[in-house]
Every structure is written in structure tokens, then in C-alpha cells.
Image (cartoon, rainbow, N blue to C red; front, side, top):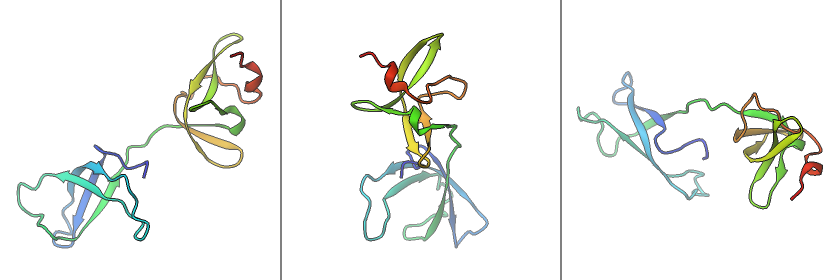
Length: 134
């Protein structure tokens, strides 16, 4: 459920008004997954000033996620710190700094970095553990 967040936009469709897409935003995403139904509670806020939407109506919701840019790096580039994974980013010739990242494993050889590194930055792809001095 990481890809559904409060303030994300949604479109709501009902059988009563099949040609009308109601727009709304997510106001709450539940923290607990119902293991039996494999669902989580999500609240959506939308304009209903015309009164089309009524209590008990069945609706389908389309989540509109804005594309997020990410960087794919070799799995060997991501090192595990005491609290967070990180990569070593080059900031000058022969000078590197630890940069915490939010990463998702893509496969056995690659990791998707969704936060912490820009596409144009130079990182250590392999052997970074040997550059750490602290």
C-alpha cells in the first residue's frame, strides 16, 4: 500500500452515473490490512454538492498516481547502515559521502532507488565498503 497516500487524486465511478467521473482526494489510508479480504480502509473526500452520491451506493475508484522518477542501480551499490540503506555519492574527485536512500529490490542484481539519489549523480557501484572510514 506504499503507492496509495493521503492527498493522492482519485476518480470515482458509479453504476447510477456511468458517464460521470467524480474527482476526489484520499484523506486517510488505514494502517491495518484485513488478512481475510486482503483490503485496507481508504477514505476519499470529494465534492458532492449536487447530491449525486448517496450513502450505501456502490462505487469503483481509480487511483491516479503521479509518476515518480527513480534510479536503478546495481544491488552492490546499496550498502546497509545501522538504520537505513545508503549509497556512496561522489561530490568531488576522490571524495565520496554516504547518502541515505529509500530503495526497493527490483531483482537479484538491481535495486530501484525511489528517494535519495538523482539520475545525474555519480555513485560507487561496487566495493564501496572499502571506502568507509568511520
